[in-house]
Length: 115
Length: 113
Image 1 (spheres, chains in turn cyan, purple):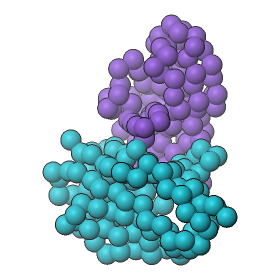
Image 2 (tube, rainbow over the protein chains, first blue to last red):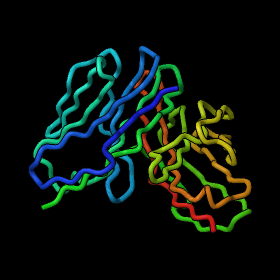
Image 3 (cartoon, each protein chain N blue to C red):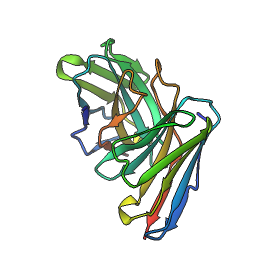
């Protein structure tokens, strides 16, 4: 069975600081997809990124960047120059290819960005 | 935004009563899912569907049943609600392979007294 670990339960930063959210996963399969979702205080879940196991290129989208390293089974998420609007719970998730896209979620990291 | 609605959005019920939650999509996606979200557990899969009348169990399916008679609707039923089923329930949809990402509904907060 697969597992996703987000060891950081809560992180607090001051606005404009950079912050990295850690995600470590476990699977015996060689083909899989990794995801990050954001859950703001309003409660909805917002899809941020998908990465497949064959693509280890880092990705940057504005202030967001993702670092995927198969050697350490990690898929970390960095927010540069954090803003108050980044305050949310962030979830990392994993699905195996050919499994009806069932997601295994980590327990989430609550990020609080303060003025 | 993906067209996913959930009803009701909030419900309070008593132990032992049946409860049905509805998920409706306008995206014509093949796959639909029900998750529950609890503190310290993230989201856990209850049941999912890979087509009309095709459903299967997830990680935490005990005490829940589902039905999908139309592509757009996926129902989650608690036959006899218990306090341990107090949770926030999310429906999600996906096209499935090769995109795999899921899009979530707004959630239903269920309280079982």
